[in-house]
Amino acid sequence: MKKSNPLITGTIILTVTGFVSRFIGFFYRIFLSRVFGAEGMGLYQLTAPVLALSFSLTVSGIQTAISKFVASETTTHDYGNSFRTLFTGFGISMLLSAACTAYIYLFSDTIAEKLLFEPRTAPLLRIIALSIPMTTVHSCINGYFYGIRKTSVPSLAQLAEQIIRVGSVYLIYIYYTSRGYKPTISFAVAGLIIGEAASMLFCLAAIYFRFCTLAAAYNPIKKAKQPVSAYISNAKRLLTLAVPLSLNRTSINFLQSLEAIYIPQCLQRYGYDNAKALSVYGVLTGMALPLILFPSAITNSVSVLLLPLVSEADDSGNHGAVRKAVRKSIQYCLLLGFLCTGMFLLFGRFAGKVLYNSTLAGSFIITLSFICPFMYVASTLNSILNGLGRTASTFLFSMISLLFRLLFVFWLIPVLGIQGYLYGLLASQLLQTLLCVFAVRKYLR
Image 1: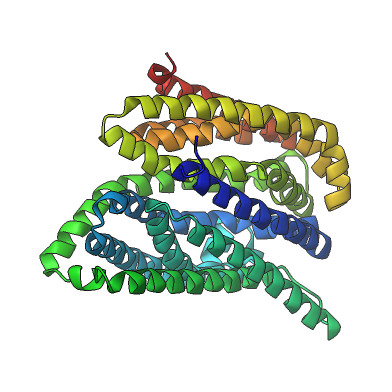
Image 2: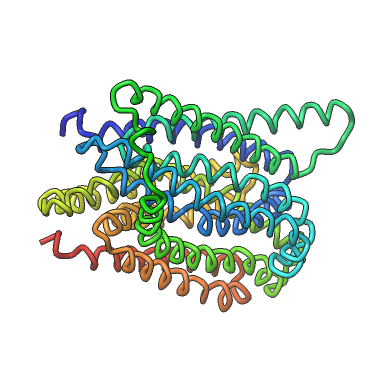
């Protein structure tokens, strides 16, 4: 394949920036684990389900819909329609994000105590709520750039967000410790807002420059001026795709939230006290899993770009291109997965000790190493299925996998401890991968 192929060039850009971002994130995780400890990491990770749910409710479906409906711009050059699509999706998402922000901020104490079972997360939730509108802005703009296959903007936005976040937290830490104050995990959450703000400003500048550049020849803003009925029609088209996607992702994130919330609770049923349960949860989700997920920067990059390309090939009846995408995705993801499994098996215990000063993290890394081939294959096949319009299938497979894993959470963790959850992760990922392969079986013949 030539270097001019948008999948190759886009994947290279996303992968390089993804690796740099995750490399920075590694040092950030090490820094957090050493400053705030495993229990602090557990508290920080407990807020992740709330952020994931808010993202799925406000912008996840809209981002995908924008990406799909502006993809034709590369051939039709209808920039006015692209602007209308982006503007309409942005308006819908901002209304939802404003409502979500207000709800989380006003009811943070109730959410922390009744849903997360940890009152200490309430101040963290109030800080996190402020980042939701910023996430909405840059997610919509990223959706546009993904659709037209200009991956440099989302990539640089991600990199800017990571650098600013890590740098701001470190500077805040230095400032407070130099004055004798004890650092708290709230510093990390404050850094999240600063990073999201940086990413939002970068994306706003990028989209402004994009349409200013086009204005001389095409004037997309002028062409986008249509009656209100045209925007209503555009909104209906966006929502037709976005609502099912958002409902699917919200349902999935809801189950993932239940999983994240009840792991510490079930560990207490196993015999741990609250501090020990949070510490084990923090080591797993804040130390071991990020290392396992590090190589997925490659497969995530491919997945993002496969959706519009497969969608375009399917719409034009180019089934050969779809077949090639399926086969190559499985081959290369399996190759990458087995290589990563071997590396984690050989160096997992060493990595846990050196990076996090935790033998428990090393043990988790070794056990989770077997998940790599299945996880990488499933992620790319899910994107292909979405590009083929089979969003119902990907939703069903994810739900089955999560429900299967929840059985391990509620039944095996109280008996086997965290080891029961690790078995559940492996089994559920294998199940999801088999279901995805079955769904694309006709392209493997």
